[in-house]
Length: 343
Image 1 (tube, helix red, strand yellow):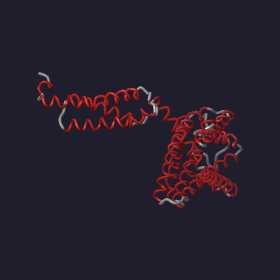
Image 2 (cartoon, helix red, strand yellow):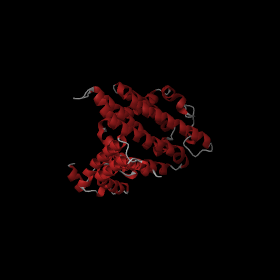
Image 3 (cartoon, one colour):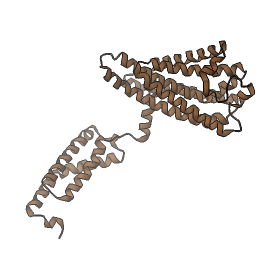
Image 4 (spheres, helix red, strand yellow):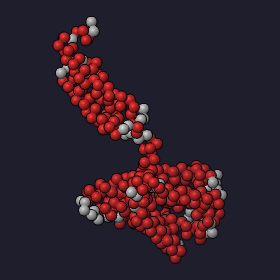
């Protein structure tokens, strides 16, 4: 005999009346969930959108009641499955993967625009550091070893122009170039993450970190230009530097933003201000990581295999234009949409 036949007549009657009183709403909810699962949620009318969570809560209530009075197991199983599907439709993310990705990159560009002042402060610190490093080496060559040290990787004061030119890619020792590429990527990743993290210490460590790394770059620029191979070095640097240095500056901007919200929280408490800043900075740092990964790919392959100076400048300049256009325009509302949104 089946389970339904084994149940007492009174329990069968309760289950039947319980189902008859609520089955219409269950079917209505199932129909809405079917459409939502087929990607038609955007086609819902206002009434349907309002009914979906209402019907879901009613189904949850029915499930709870059915379980509490031990009604038909098949009905309980049906309600459990229906409520699980409805939960995803009501509370789950409705955007497609492409929409989520587009939304992230739009938020990233808006976060960068929100931190323009901090970005230019980071740029100023880095530029002054590079200028200072160049001038220090120009007046006293011993500063080069102090600033660059073990990071020289065969580029020291004893190197000839030919030896320096040999370090700019296209050499036969591809393994050495790969090791050097990994070193640069890991070093700059540490700098970027540290520049952001120490922002909570008031921004001064972030500024010092940017200045010190700028001084290292300035010292190397001085050495190559002093040896007459500065243009080649600038081209070698540009093919990945427009992405990698940009990532470091953005990380520094995020650090300065944390410092500003900590020092000047406005009407919020400092903890609330930091939490608010963390949302913007978190999005920005995800973008920094992506930029560093891209820079690492360029650094490990393109920069070492593309040896023509003109092509290096073209690729580096092209990437710079792409980043400027992206951060300036992405995530904005234009035309009629901008008018509707009040932007």
